[in-house]
Length: 85
Image (cartoon, rainbow, N blue to C red):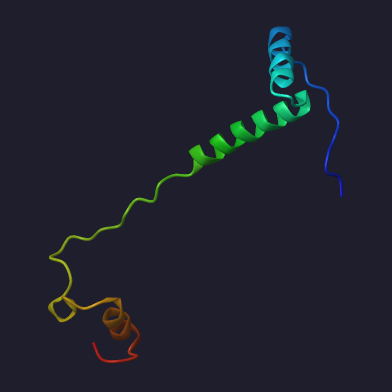
């Protein structure tokens, strides 16, 4: 299994110099700094793609009388006919 691949990337000179200085100041490698940056960007983009679930609601006046004040067990039992509600 391949865990690393070599590649060539064109990076603006000023950005590369800043990255090298940051890597040195952080006592890390340029490779590690680049990998961390890529992970961060990809993680942010993946999180942005997730959309919140829109709640589904129905117009009405709440639970039917027979279920008011009872828990989910009573509703489930009524749906599946496994007990008394």
